[in-house]
Image (cartoon, rainbow, N blue to C red):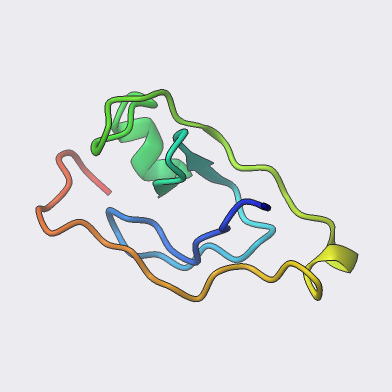
Length: 81
């Protein structure tokens, strides 16, 4: 099963297209580079390490499209954005 490739940052809700620099934890919580840095590369949800989300090759997006489900935190994220 391919990665979900969520379309937004869970903190600031900025759009993260499939080729954007994004960071994920092992549960695929998704953060933009700015928010990931402000979180010291630790997931606010599970405490796990944030790593760069791989970029899916464009020719694979048709058979394995990114998710359209937006996920945002109920509580605000700490730190500047």
